[in-house]
Amino acid sequence: MRGLFLGILYGMVIRSFLKVIVGVKYVNREALKQEKQFIIVSNHNSHIDTLAIMGALPFGQVQHVHPIAAGDYFGSSKIKAGITKLFTNAILIRRSKNAEAPNPIELMSAAITRGESLILFPEGSRGTPGKMQEFKKGIGILLQMHPEIFFIPIYMKGMGKVLPKGERLLVPFDTYVHFGNPKKCVSNEVESIVKEIEAAILELN
Amino acid sequence: MNIFTSKTYLDNIEVIAIIGIIIGVLLFASTLFYVWGLLKPSADLKELKTRTNSWWAMAALIIITTLVHPILSFIAFGLLSFVALRELASISKNVREEDRRVIIWCYLAIPIQYFIAYKGWFNIFVIFIPVFMFVWIPFMLVVRGATSEIGRSMSVLPTQLMLTVFSLSHLAYLLSLPNLEGFHAGGRGLLLFVVFLTEINDVFQFIWGKILGKYKILPKISPNKTWEGFIGGILSTTILAYFLRFLTPFTGMEALIIGFCIANAGFVGDIIISAVKRDIGIKDTGLLIPGHGGILDRIDSLSLSAPTFFYIVYNLYYAV
Image: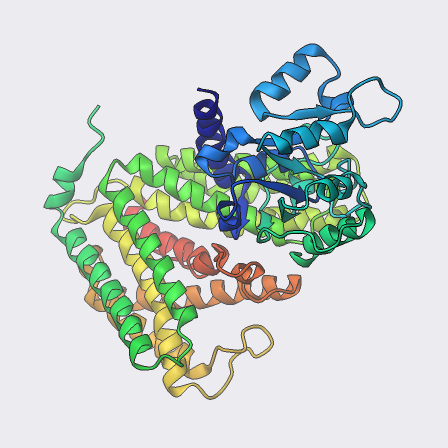
């Protein structure tokens, strides 16, 4: 039931909206169909980013893919957290160290063990449009724990113009979502894994 | 409400004839490039094939929307304007970050302009974008308060509206023209006449340029365009216009002159968009991403030939 709801919401409603009105163009979307389980890693400039990735997923996949979202932003109230989880399938994590919430890495790792897929923005926040910030280490730790999991790099261009940080009005512009083919990490050290992923994303630019 | 007007449409023998011709030409082109590719696998036909495919899409759009209720044509042309404007606004580096919100006004002008065209309010149609929006956009830019380089935005944004919305809306307005006594093909005939001639003029120019091309016409803007292609294209289009005049109320002489005007306007539209793209630093808007054709490359000639044709026809036959 939930799969059908999310499948129709993203596969039809949101995808048509993104393609016809916003002007999102997918390049090499077939990369999503090659593996059953994966971690999507992408650069991050806008709230549209998550929708654009979710809207690209194959129909049956949507309910098994969870965007990792900032708990302090999307979970600031119970209602906000509920809505975020209902409509985006998100896993909310804490961004600061001293909060009493569960460890983000453990939450993500548990989802992977259950056979679920994740969407991660290793930059941690949306930042300034068109600029990529340094990646956080979490993705490295996660892939070190699960070296058998494929990661799919995505490079998005123009999303920061459609809906930049701090803006409420969505303005249509042509935007591109480049999907890279699924890869496994070569190294097993956290920092070099992060570097590998960063390079894979930049390569798509 | 019965939205299908296909009965009257099928009575319209002239329109049926031109649709037959269009489908025939496209079938011929697709088969030709397919066989050519089989016989000579080394030949680079990708560009030709993509072009043919986009003509199929365009033909389907125009044929299907004219076949069903006219309001669908207005929606379809409105969407075409929207996609073209969005593309132009996206590749344009002349627009500042602060103008993001003002661009919404440009988008909002599209449904208004097409609604006016649908209603056939001619006097408002001709001034809404060139006069009203020409003032409204600078006003909105001023209200937002960022004055640095505001003059550039004041000229770029209305120009983009003119090239993509005002120009193309004339195609839709053709369908709102009143019926003329003794002229059966009507607005649909005129629409097919101008679109078909404009597109085929591009093809003629391309073919003549390939066969005879030697002297470059505007090497700094469009290095592939030659005098031979330009003249050959204009002559072919002018002659073809004479034979397609059954779609129009024109006499033979008028058809020749109007065909000549369409061909020239198409060329000018093409090089204007080419020059805009050169300024931005890309040759084909579609080349931004391989496999994603830019709509601007397809409508560049139409953006000038449509209004040119419209005003000639309007003043010859519809102005009271």
